[in-house]
Length: 434
Ligand code: NAI
Ligand code: MG
Image (cartoon, rainbow, N blue to C red):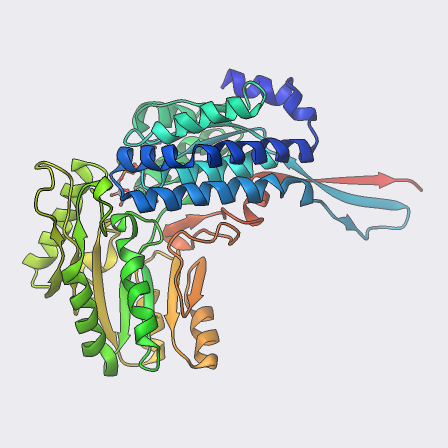
């Protein structure tokens, strides 16, 4: 904290033009590119995710540094028509020291989105990676040193949430806190930050729906519907964990999904299958317990994938599960599982679809599948979600797209230009020149 404060208050960072800060981010991106294969392998081994996903993560990290490397000098204030004899203008100023508390599901990507936006705006940063997956953060910190960031601009403190995370969130020297993770931890972090009256960005996951109408191109939808829940073993804030299906095509689509689910395989990260291991024995137990509770409550299982033969015993593998039809009030329909578990729900008309989509308290991402243009607009507006995809879905993709939640999914926006607003504050200056 002292290093970050010194770097902000006294170091060269505070006087550095935005274009120079951007160049450092761009240089960091080039280092990441040169180490791409090693970083992908490191992330994959540390988290258990398939190597292909590790490579996709590195590609996203590169895009974040590329985007924010070029963005800091393109954010500017406004002039405001005010009283005669006055000129009023606004500046976007950095908060100061930003604390970033990072989860384990996409450790490197989420680090890059926080680091890119915070540093582009001229803040300094203290990051606490998740105790379950800290290696890529430490490696990127080494690359940042090589890229030439001044001392103290980007700092990493490892440790457990209750200790290092809590100490950081409530530290009086922190000017702004950004967090991605579970709602209860988000609440704890907001309470800690509130003691110092600090602003926060909260990205707290979801129970994101995809709504499939009978007129949709089911063939185009099918692989996207599967990918949105299988990606990263379902451990994705924006995982498409609910599919709402218009009744005339329910049986047909459920059967097609069941056929795909039956063929999904989980196994070691370097075997590069549909799914790797889940992050920890704790997460595997949590996913298994929620699935078993749904099964015990009589929720029909339409299909189950498999764990490949020969996967190391004791690994945190979990065979994907497809449930349907699911009672919208059931625990499995309402709670974020954060595993490869998909629930299907039939619906009869547009208004019921929107009501079901909005029925969990979460509101992060939604998908709408229909060829009807009017319906595309109505449903996209009716659904309470930070991102809505029409005839597509982007679980985590699109670094240029503002991303964040409504309701229980949190507040504030990351990614894109919007993140630069969260990572800065407006100062208004009024000149009385007579
Ligand atoms: P978590 O939200 O507790 O952990 C995320 C980060 O917060 C980690 O870096 C952790 O060390 C830190 N942390 C934990 N307690 C803290 C505290 N009191 N003060 C400050 N920092 C703290 O998530 P956890 O416990 O690893 O997973 C539990 C569930 O949370 C998962 O099963 C999943 O449902 C959800 N989750 C959602 C994520 C998302 O992206 N939406 C990411 C990770 C977990
Ligand atoms: Mg926790």
